[in-house]
Length: 415
Ligand SMILES: *Cc1c(COP(=O)(O)O)cnc(C)c1O
Image 1 (cartoon, rainbow, N blue to C red):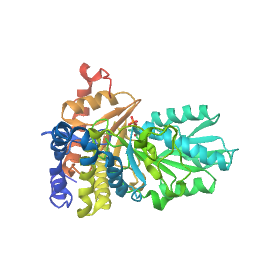
Image 2: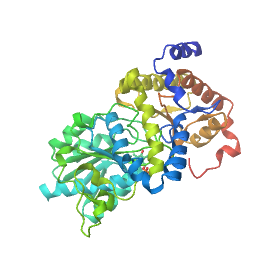
Image 3: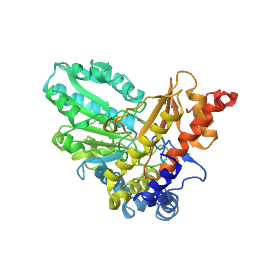
Image 4: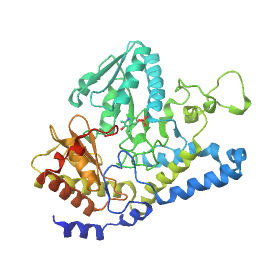
């Protein structure tokens, strides 16, 4: 593979027109869409419209006339199509952390009502910290135990004590992807419920929650869904739990009749009860624009086409790096079926400084302590030549030892 080959792949790429949906700053190779997706071109005008017209002119009337109240369900239904969820079973609300608290509470209650002796929540030691912090806190409140294992130890941890298995589908640090259907089936066979965190999956890899028979899921709006910084998150529950899945944050927007202002809480039917307080209208409007960029791939082959391109990009980058950067180890799976939409490299000492040197060259990835250089590939707006050039920049940073510069060795707050 040389640069000409990469350009030829771009010329033949059916998804290439989707890049036009985004404002990709000139000269930038953006490999951090797994942390904050690129700004869609439609977003600024849409948010401006919500601000100037719907808020500015419509004011309070817009809750009805502009459909503000329906946004969590409307955007939720769009995301549902990307993760194999039925219409009306997924809603946008709060943050991923908060939604995890809700579904973990519900899953623990359901599991332990049926089988009181079960008292562990099982997860992976390398799961994203907020997931583990939320689980730790909940386990303590329920007098239960959080059991953390390595991926190889999962099967053994699914024992008679396990109430809930809580996993992130694609690991944020390693990019390793679980077989959702197989893991869910194993957990169910062991008598446990399963929660999937789709933070690095929604809009990035094909997901079919319904086919997998999962119990609950949450996910993030600002990563591959391009919803903007701090975009609200989503939450899903399998319809078989309808009628049983309460949530602990019994706010008025999740009430069956918020505008009857009753003194007692009566949850809304279905997933609507997973809302808590007033929807974040501006953020929801931006998120809808982001989700629409992913749905725009529908007519070009949809998630299957996005996945095929994502794999081509990550394969190309990983192969170039392995061929030209002997000092770096591949930390994400080489097998396509086990890899999400990112490539992770590791170096024992200089990872942070190398990432900073790359950013100075206009190649944006990120660093995850202690040793991972992380590169996310969003097939909506990245080209094969970007993957090729990024690897070439990395080679030059290492060969010229640019990472030695003092300014690249000063830790910033956000890495
Ligand atoms: C990004 C991410 C989150 C983020 O949670 P917030 O509540 O939005 O801060 C949570 N879990 C995982 C696995 C993530 O990758």
